[in-house]
Length: 258
Image 1: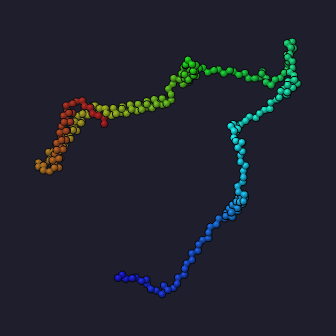
Image 2 (image 1 turned 180 degrees about the vertical axis):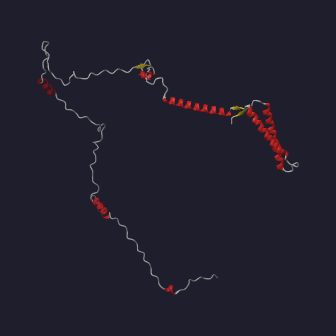
Image 3 (image 1 turned 90 degrees about the vertical axis):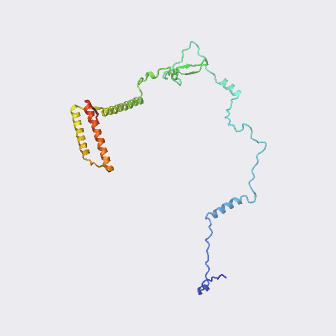
């Protein structure tokens, strides 16, 4: 059977524990509540007994007609026939002056024609007709008018072309200078007889030094280093012999400057 585990007995377990009372926070009440309640009462009391306000229904005979909302011009009162007849009778025009009457002098009019500006009529722009139906265009846009010929810079190259040509010219000069320098560096120098003789003597001295070192090698060459040293000396002596033979055979020798 499984043993039951009892809690540890203590005298303090017999002391009744006090219950903790949880105090709830007060309910939130908006400060605008009285104003909202008063406003709702005012709007409800107006129609509490009688219901919504009764509006006058439109009459079926007063329907919206066509063009009834179009703007209308104000009508000017037209004079009646009697009024026109009375005006024509009361207002009498002056008589036509006779041919022998002198002309009136000193009459001032609203406009003084002597001081008015004389306007020069505008000349029509030259046009050309390109169809048999009279279609015409401005002659200036046709390309037949030599307007570019009258410019001050006519016949001169634009600025951007001159700048490009100048840049190409500078690039070509720089390229020619580099090619000339390369040719001068790669040019051959002619050795004089004194220089050729001095070089020949130096090569013979080098050959003698190598030959003396070659003669000093041991008779038994049993290691790789000795074999490699012997081969290197033989190749150097052979190359010097070829160069000495070339310098002795050729009297004119050119060498590069570098």
